[in-house]
Image (cartoon, rainbow, N blue to C red; front, side, top):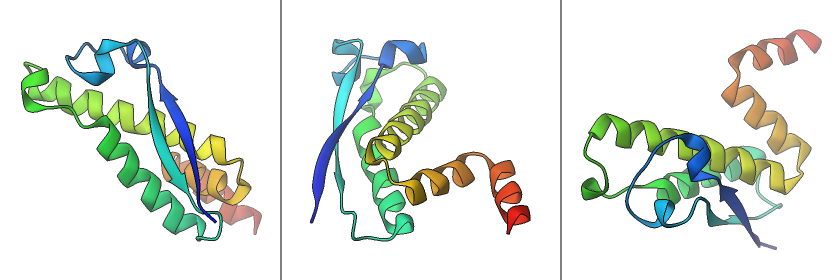
Length: 112
């Protein structure tokens, strides 16, 4: 069974100004599809892809491509974190911790 939920990005909190959907409002929502029957790895990969798509900024929306790339990475990271947290799935949350903080992986390995 697949579930769709929304992750909210507070674009203003990222400190970037862009033209387009994300800047029309200080926040925007992205719908994420979540299938609890998939493995945490498959779900995480799907969430990464969905966050990349939701955070894509048009080439004409920003003057500096470096700012565009920085904004997109920050947007993706925040949306991904929000989406993972919204699932309340301990395995997925743990995987996200390991992927975003390599130190967490070595701590987890030492506990085994």
